[in-house]
Image 1: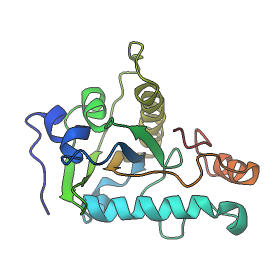
Image 2 (image 1 turned 60 degrees about the vertical axis):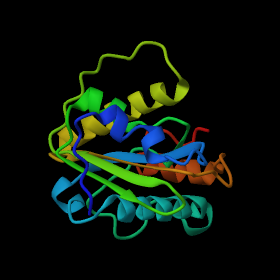
Image 3 (image 1 turned 45 degrees about the vertical axis):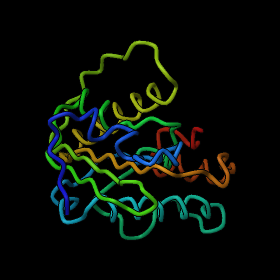
Length: 192
């Protein structure tokens, strides 16, 4: 496992660094409260594969009746898997929460890298960012909620990101949205 040394988080975890070949134009991310000790036994590729599985579960929620797969005991997402266009939320998270306590950056084929950062005791300053791109503003709000929930249950915060994603269906059904609300998701859409 390659653990990134975050001398320059903007360079190491930027969209350009995670998608160095220029072929990817989007990035998926997932965030929420996490037992950071449990996350440390994984790496960014493994966690990004769990994110992919989560997306599949969300896609089938209206048929299965669940939006969270069995086996997620150490992480509670605050939103469905989100998509950005050419922007990585990780440098912004570091700017808001400080240096992560655990970081993993791994090559995951097709000239992209998966990345994950975790903070054991995240404190969010709550100051709203200046006007900016919708992706950044949405992430800001989700990070604020993830941090508050983490503080409430004594956990840390995990953010995982991987370029090269696209949605089959950006919209979710009314039943899936209801299940997402019941599971505690702050938003019930996939933002594209």
